[in-house]
Length: 174
Image (tube, rainbow, N blue to C red):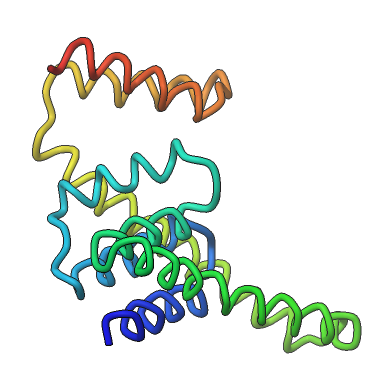
């Protein structure tokens, strides 16, 4: 029963999670809460881990939640659940996009989806910000500001920044 629940919960994320990993964060958090697996702080750690590991955030998060819920089998089922709808949708879109690419309805649908995606990303920022600002110290505040400047102004790779922040955190916050 847990396997079916894992598959269906993460298939819903895979089906309705437009906008990539950051936009999916609210749905992923609600799904993790469905299994009573983690607090907001633990979820923040999951997001950080998902950012530094290879692959899409939603897949990494599904694997983590599935593993916590039901071991290796749960990880496999949750990962399959989040990936399967995208696989089916891409095949369907490839088939129909050539036929209807100039349709005003298709253009209108994408025009309507874009602001929703921005809103979902903004809600992820707010969610992550709440957890971060509750435990803000001068060191973590400095890391936050430094990371924004390095990405925004100097276009430094987020991978380098996350690794550097992890090292700084390990040295200065332990």
